Image (cartoon, rainbow, N blue to C red):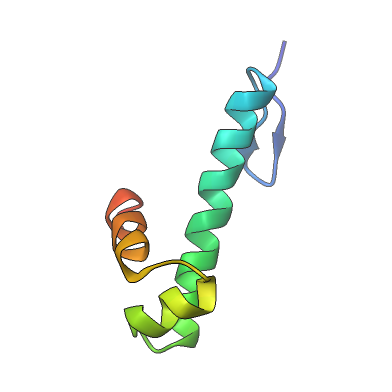
Length: 65
């Protein structure tokens, strides 16, 4: 059985596993977008995303952005 994908997202496994992978992809995209929109200013990007500065820094490290 072939593994299905949607826009490169692996749809194999449980619904919880797919949700986790999808959330990671979307978070990375939104963080990149917010940083680009705010010319790399992390404080403004965090405000745009509605998260704390500390949370944004953790996500940037987690996703190696």
